[in-house]
Image 1 (cartoon, helix red, strand yellow):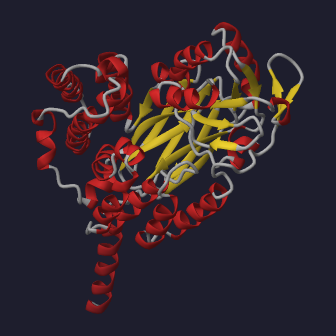
Image 2: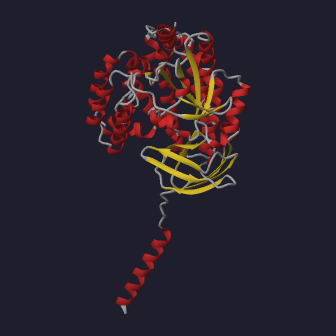
Image 3: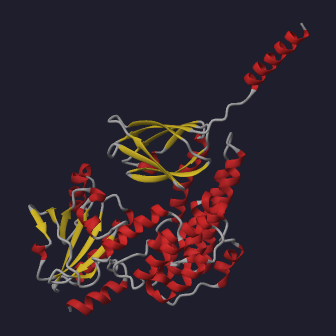
Length: 453
């Protein structure tokens, strides 16, 4: 009898304990409605995470994301930052015609994500034009960025019913964003002021001396910290203008304790793999040695093999594209003159910012032995948008449309992984530079003057 009672009691305990235990949810339910969708796909991207979402004809999507807590990117036509926590059921509504202004979240996790959407607009309004921002003197620049950080902090502290852990994480993120802006000032001011020898006063960069640039946890959590580390380890302008510094950069990366940071920086270093860069072989060898990410190494090897066909003096790859003026245009049709190619798209902000400079360059060399060809990689759905943009913006030169988006032959043949991209070809169809200076870069004028005047 006592034996039966003991067994019954044990079963009762197990049932009750089973009912009272909490179930851990290791996924996020993410759904949404996109007005004016651009294609059938959207993506959620993060550290070692990539998930493709299927967007239906009516613009709706819904999926389960097995993620850890943190910042991710949602990509459809453009990109925005989202914050995901396992257990959330997050719903997004947006309109690609307005994008950032239209983002609205509902459901669990909505408070944090509506904050991120509003923060972006707040920063955009306060920052204004980046050229004007970076041309400020040191004191004014620091004060402006302190103002931006303070405004975002006030916005964060005004949140109600949000996870205190998010507030703590985002507070740290805001500080890294601020430090990043301090770090970018010297090289950006030198660029926009056309003063390559410019050095910022110590008070601008003093806060950076307190930063630990070998913090793996923060590297895997904050894209702002990741960008800060990359900028600290390999300044773009220095590496591009002074290739002799490459060896020192490689040595610094090798000296880091975190293999994840070394892998990330090796991948970033691979981004400098350009047919016009002197240290191509050194970069490739360094990445192969430093990185333990076999996927990254395989991608870089494939890119290196393509780049080796794009060195100066090699035949320029052929193409056959739709001409805005009518008919089609091939590379052979452009022979007899130097050709300056602008690879762009109507959705690309940096591309559009180069247009005024491109118009100035076109005007300067109007009667010279050079022609200007803009090649759009807009999606097929945006073909009419491309034509309208050309008309409304009164774009000059030869305007071509490369049907195929990122799979266009000009993208793959010239190893292009980001736009705008500029290419210079000589009158005989041979490559002068497969990664030529931008119209906003005074180096382009120096190059063209030496060739066509």
